[in-house]
Length: 195
Image 1 (cartoon, helix red, strand yellow):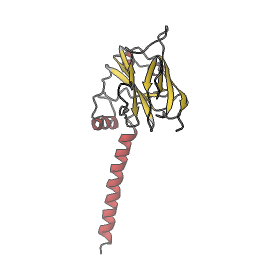
Image 2 (spheres, one colour; image 1 turned 90 degrees about the vertical axis):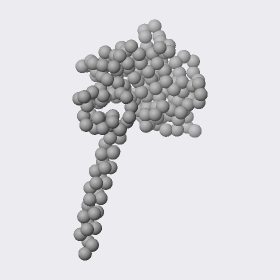
Image 3 (cartoon, one colour; image 1 turned 180 degrees about the horizontal axis):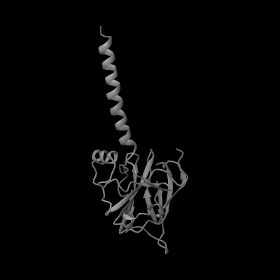
Image 4 (spheres, helix red, strand yellow; image 1 turned 45 degrees about the vertical axis):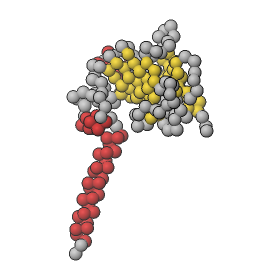
């Protein structure tokens, strides 16, 4: 007597629960389609445009952050180093090279959920184009480490994986059709704290 209603309820629960879970997983798994990947760096140039796919629009709406328009800039994120290993908050890294032409850029360390790291007072967790010391050819080296370093240094001491976020403001690269040819900094692991 109760067999049919129980089966109907079970079927509906699985269908709605599975649908809600898969939609939530998809929104967390990607910022949308149309990513470009340059070494360890990835960007979604169409993320903030009217041409963005439905997943990107839903991600943008749920994120609650104001994003740059395509003509305003471009955001690259790296979660791996040059060798493909995940970036760890217990390791030291060197970010070296140069960025594509931009009026201004920032490099920030975030946790796996894209939130800035909680750092002790007066230690840098980001660096920008105005404060970066450069070589004669315009290239730079930025050290990410738990202890202070001479030159360009960003504090890094976390118990989880991290991401690097490179934001290019007012860059012609955002409107370029050949973004795959952009020159982005290299991320090299120096060593890790085994503690």
